[in-house]
Length: 189
Image 1 (cartoon, one colour):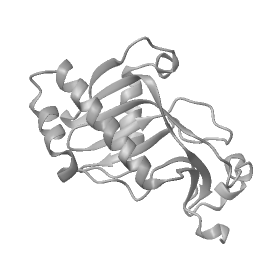
Image 2 (cartoon, helix red, strand yellow):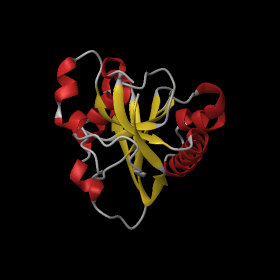
Image 3 (spheres, helix red, strand yellow):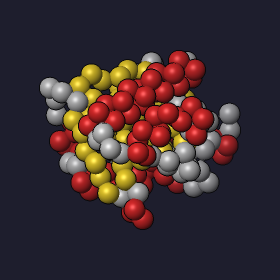
């Protein structure tokens, strides 16, 4: 593959269908927990009922380590030059952020064997009206309210947050007691 054709590099789920099913199940479980926590929230209830009809998966399940795009400087960056293609690397999910009607993003607060350039490592999980790149803006807003370091601490039980976003949107975040592991491999795309 020619370097000029690379759009991004990262950790991709080895089995895309299995990862999609795992993330769909995680989202459904998270919505059930949120519906118990916020019993009168009609948006959450509707989202759970209409999840499969109104949301779609992004083109691939992956954790981006570097967006290369059309910037030749990125090909000389440490994240690119130290990237280890075909390295087995599991993706570990610690939390999930859900913005009804907009996007679902899985959060990964771990150190990986490859350099990461995203401020907050994540896997875009399901798309409503927002695009995959909007996961970055969602997490920027989420981590204004929740300390990133706080989310790295071991927890005893699932933790919940309801966060007011821009333009009246809301995000719900669940920090998971049990981490989700997706077998992955480092690739260029």
